[in-house]
Length: 56
Image (cartoon, rainbow, N blue to C red; front, side, top):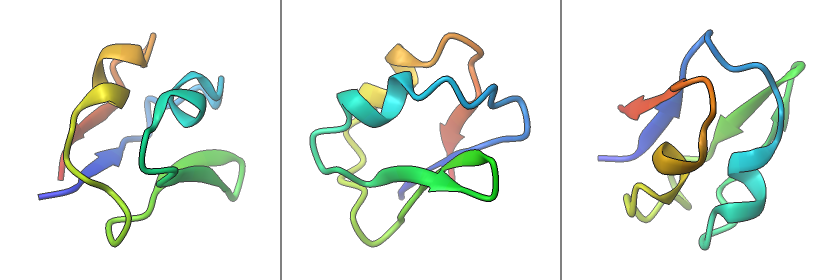
């Protein structure tokens, strides 16, 4: 199951650079995880300073 970014996202971009699948991008002023690209590794969860990334 892919991860998703919640409304707690502060759009800092830390997760995007750490994603090995390049599944994270900016969309409508916040970060978004493309579920088709997400490899479910959880790297982004550990990187997020606002705990905005959860299992989807």
